[in-house]
Length: 49
Image (tube, rainbow, N blue to C red; front, side):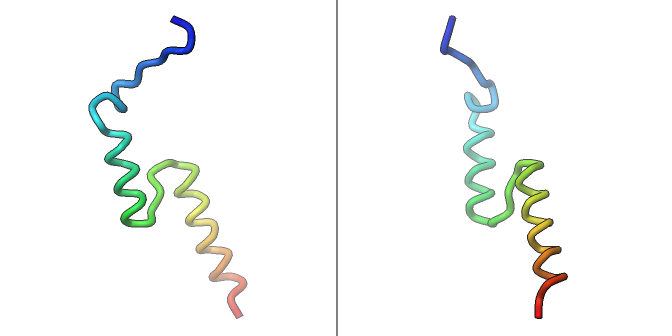
């Protein structure tokens, strides 16, 4: 079917659980999000006055 996709992770609630954990802890659960968070921490540490 066009326009229809099925995700088993979404179906059993893994996606929602990961989103809730990320929101409550402030730590992203995606690889790209973690890299951005770590990069920001490093830049703050380097350029802090």
